[in-house]
Image (tube, rainbow, N blue to C red; front, side, top):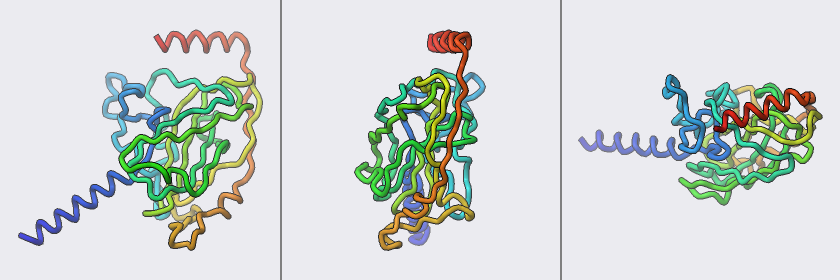
Length: 243
């Protein structure tokens, strides 16, 4: 009987760790997130809500989910951010793993190409509290072109399992009509056995993967101009969908 109770205690302890060791956007809303303030599913979509939205996309040993996990959000109004705006993002934190290294990237083609526009190395989320909502600002590039886009938050944790966390939010950027955005491609480390491996910082004598981040290749994405007629049509659709 004691062995049964002991086994049960180990199981519940393991489950507790699993449910705590997760992080996701809360604002802006992650795709198919279960948060009440996020777009709600349609009549036949309630089974598509992701109640495990904070789970990692993979580990160094395996890829669990695509980088954005889901191909789209539920229908609803996307948040609109101005080029150059600082967004007070809200993160749903299970466990902060002594922080880690964060990247923020934009995509204008539904995740085919990404441009990193902000980094926070080593201490990203280091000041968060387990089981909290934590403010983690990011700033949209001042020269970001207008259009529908995805903001992707990517995090490699300092401590614990070698995992990759990623959270995608569908947004609207208001900036220049057409143009380009240059930067580097994101590093997807600890994301399957063929990805770069970043060891726990303490076990690697303080090596947090700097060499991998420094080696990220450059990229430029081009966003075409939109005609005045199409701009007006998009504005009307946005107003209609917000009613």
